[in-house]
Length: 312
Image (cartoon, rainbow, N blue to C red; front, side, top):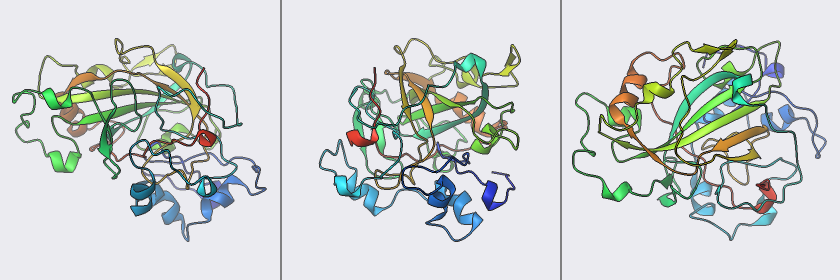
């Protein structure tokens, strides 16, 4: 990410990478930037925080559908967190805000992927483990053909952190700021717009080697502008009515004990779709404007009702 700011103006956004707006003082009486700065010694520490990955505490405390969390160790004073089980509508977090406007009235600012799914849903409920690249896998992952699992010639699966048979969750990040799409989530804000509305459209894919599967190019940006707004060429359809809820930014550095302060409106489709890995490889290696060349790690799902918004 190529962002140059003073620490006072630095924002720390992490849907997987990036920056976030400085918000007003919260219930604890400390400003968001003070709370964000606390674990860090330098600006570099702040900027690299999203890339640190999950630690042993995450693995030990946030296993599969962990219901035995220690409420005394939960984040205090934060709004609802993400990711979650989208089939579970229960949430008791008191923080509420009006959801972000429709994506057609916002600018696409970033596209990135996670291996595996960060959210759990009806179509992706196979636990993949508590590691940085754990999360959830699509139903049907174990029934793929040998051809579907074949690795494309010349594609470096280790560098890309994804291979045929893997599940990925794709995030199309939208901002109310007058910005153009670019590398990192810092592209979602500007000097003139440091506190944007944020909305993420999310789709979980089962990655296969099959030219008849969905083509990632259909969902890319490629300079597409509609009615003055930067937009993906299309968003996935046919995978169920998106589940819309209030949450936060994500990424493997956050847990139920280390929460994100950002407010994000989420729209997560409940079913998987097969995606051709060759098209994803082309996007990774073809010089996309987001400079995305690999899939990112996951934040384990949040299970504490105190950290979840209700889903209506």
